[in-house]
Image 1 (cartoon, rainbow, N blue to C red):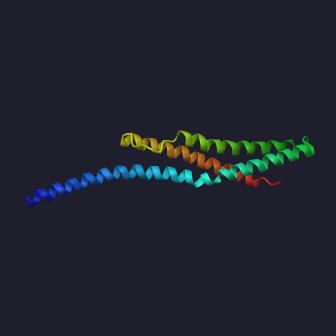
Image 2 (cartoon, rainbow, N blue to C red):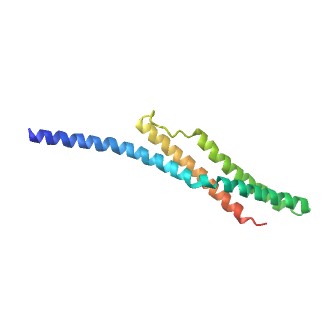
Length: 139
């Protein structure tokens, strides 16, 4: 009898650990997605500041000598476009992200969160790259 109780206890424990493991994988994925987002979200203001700085510089160069500064102005406009694209990319991603996956089946939630992780990683990288490139441009 004691052996049966021990076996039942072990089976229940194993089942509980397996069930919890799935939840922890889902939670770990969700936490990772949020972490990737949170890493660059504070840089959104910096994106706009750099965008304004480069637009002002392009305007200044245009007023000084638009013909001789054409290449530099175009480079600035390209960097401004990259900054704007990165900024918009964050908000596009945020609008479609569903943090509450409780209505999904476990496997479906994991697939969804992996897709979201990939998407937010691209947004993260675009923001970092746009800022890095913008900061290389001096006045």
